[in-house]
Amino acid sequence: MSENQPRKVRLHVEDVSYRYPGGTRTLALEGLTLDVHDNEFLAIVGPVGCGKTTFLRIVAGFLGPTRGAVRCDGAAVHAPGADRGYVFQEDAIFPWLTVQDNLEFGLRAKGMARSERAAIAMELIRLIGLQGYERAYPRDLSAGMSKMVEVARVLATDPAMLILDEPFGSL
Image 1 (cartoon, rainbow, N blue to C red):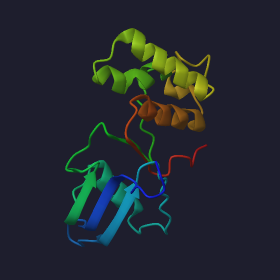
Image 2 (cartoon, rainbow, N blue to C red):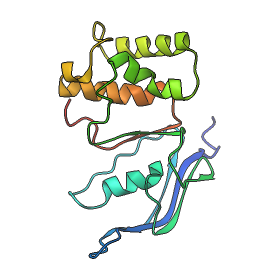
Image 3 (cartoon, rainbow, N blue to C red):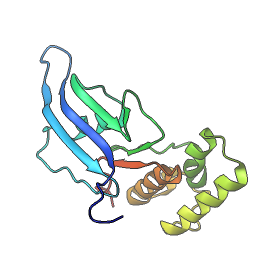
Image 4 (spheres, rainbow, N blue to C red):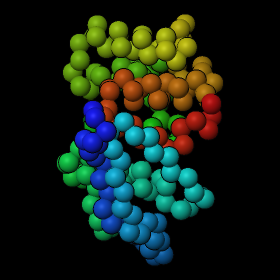
C-alpha cells in the first residue's frame, strides 16, 4: 500500500454512550468517537470504573450502546460475531474440556473437519508452549497457562478483530 492510499477503517465508533439500567442508571460512556484502521493496535488505559470493559463489550456486541453506533468492517454491530474474537477479563475456558478440546471448540462450531481442527489446535499448543498438556483439564493448569489457552482458543478461529479485556493479569 502506498503512503497516499487511505487505510481501511476496521472499526468505526460514532458518538457512543452507555448508561447502565437500574436504580442508579450509571453513565459509563459518553460521546465516544474513534476509528481503528487495518493492522492498528489500540490500547485503552484508564482508572477502574471509567468504562473500558463496557466499551469493549459494546464493540464485541454483548451490549448495545444507549446512543451512537458501532461498525466493524462497515457492518453495524448489534450482536456478537465470528469477526470479533473476545478474550474476557474473567476465566472463560470450559473446565469440562481438555486443552485441545478447548482450542477446537470454536472450530467445531464452525463445522470444521476433525483433522483440520486438530492440526490448528496442535500448532497453537506448540506456539504457546503447552506441548504435553493437550489432554490436561483446566484444573491441572496454572492460571497463566489457562489464560494462554483462552487467548489461543480465540486466535484459532482467526477473527478479523481481537478484543482483549485485561487478558494478561495472570501471566
